[in-house]
Image (cartoon, rainbow, N blue to C red):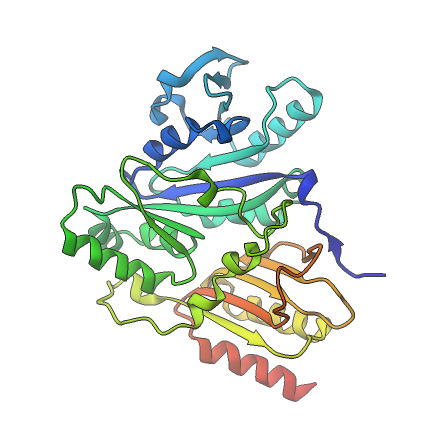
Amino acid sequence: MSLFDRDKSAERLPVALITGFLGSGKTTLLNRVLGDPRMARSLVLVNEFGEVGLDHLFMEQVGGDMVLLQSGCVCCTIQGDLDRTLRDIARRRAAGTAPPFDRVLLETTGLADPAPILQLLLNHPMISHDYRLDGVIATVDAVNGARQLDEHPEAVKQAAVADRLLISKTDIAEVDTNAHLRARLENLNPGAALYEIVQGEIDPALLFDSGPFDPAGKSDSVRAWLGAEAHDHHHHHVDRSRHDAHIGSFCLTFEEPLDWDRFNRWLMAVRASWGDRLLRVKGVLNVVGEDQPLVIHGVHRTFHPPTLLARWPDAERRSRLVFITRDLDRQSVEESWKQMVEEA
């Protein structure tokens, strides 16, 4: 009997976290993607309707905090704490008192640190019962993005933890400015897919329903989520600001199947020693005694309970563990693993 839970993706709603600094185009992106017929039956969670600028899409009120959009999507304001809002929505959906929806798009405020929201989605038992993290999408302003990365640690963190980075306003930015920003983002977060967009124009299929727990079982979903190949490639040097010079990313690979007890002890030690420096950790593991891949991911010291995917996405069977860190180098983490193996 397995020690790990099977993935229950089909039973849980995917949540896409849309973050990005003030004025970077989050609302423009939402307006654009919600007009796509494939995005019908989406629930959009925002702080205030008035701040989102979706008024022209409103069709009818459905309760004090929920409206139905012409596109078939639902828009809901966050009432108090996010966890309370998510639990209330799950209850209403189960009771049939809310319009039907199949995914959640959660827009953060421009100054938000995404880590607390990720921690809530990954490890709150009452939330993870109904929801799963589909991915983190971050918008970056091509005109002002470099200055925002220089001056605001939140902007750096938003970009560093993203699975997909969108450079907006490329039509009005200088070519050299845009190229430098792109190189900087590739250096800051080499594992993220990067797209340049104008007026929020992008195929929603590139952004949503592509996380590690995709029920459709896309063959490249795990590989894309990890971005392992990107982490292992050499990246050209670019000038880095005082903030993102502290951010690093690397991928550890393990050729042989892992002993779970030993690996888990090591991971607990890493979290205890460097939890504050772990912006995000994502891994797909080949564990002794399991035929299926084991997925783990976490933020700081908070980790989602490990789950087994239905199958491996391809012939690759190496364990891959991606770290996105602040002031924590690869060598320190590798040495801690070597020490654990030597002591065993």
